[in-house]
Each structure stands twice: as structure tokens, then as C-alpha cells.
Image 1 (cartoon, rainbow, N blue to C red):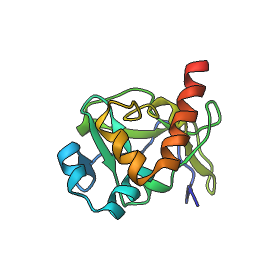
Image 2 (image 1 turned 45 degrees about the vertical axis):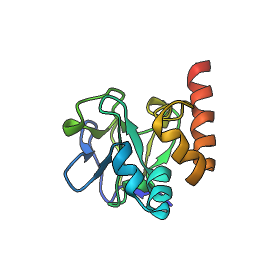
Image 3 (image 1 turned 90 degrees about the vertical axis):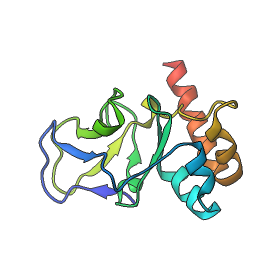
Image 4 (image 1 turned 90 degrees about the horizontal axis):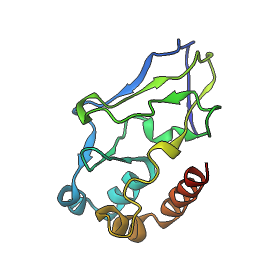
Length: 142
């Protein structure tokens, strides 16, 4: 599974941007989710570090796959305010090409043992937590 460009996309084009239809959960809101929603969210979302909110979506962005830089073709590499969060095309993308993002930029969000998200990862999506720890190890080694 993945996300593929239907048409050619020019470098710098916004591919995705935060809007009010997204779920942006703080700890209390995340606690109210069902176990099934938590697992779904944890597998495909991320912690927006400046706001300490966990973002997850159901619009297809949860299928964006990881590829290490410089091969990734989507991303941002900085933290804007939550209302301005987005992903852009890092280079020209051909029609039919898979969109991929280097997750190492944000992969450490919420995985520390003392962060509120960690207990949810352990209980509902430990395999994704292990994947994020692997990415963090790679990031630290670089």
C-alpha cells in the first residue's frame, strides 16, 4: 500500500496540509478514543512536537510510506505552527510515482518512556513503536 501521484507534481507543491477535519489529540482526547481508534491513529499519525498534539487522519495520508533521504520525495523538515503544518514535494514527482517521506525527522515524537504517548504505543501498537525506535537510532547515528 502507498500513495501514488495521479499526475506530475512540481517541486514545492503542497501535497497535504493540516485542516479542521484532522484529528489533533492531546492526552485527554487520546484517552477517550477506543482501543481500535488508538491503534489506527498510532500506526499512521505523528506527534506535532511544538503543540504536543498527536495528529492522525483518515484521508489517505496514513498510507504515506517511509524512504530515507535523499530518496524521499515529500516532507518539510521543520515544525511550523499546527495550523500551518503541511507536506510539500521535495523535488519534481512523476505521474505514477509513489510519494514517500523520511520519517526520521519526526519519528522520536512521543517515544520517550516519560512521554504521554509512550504508554499508548506500548499498549496498542508496540510494533510501530519498535519501528520508530529503529528510526531514532538511525537519526542519532547520522
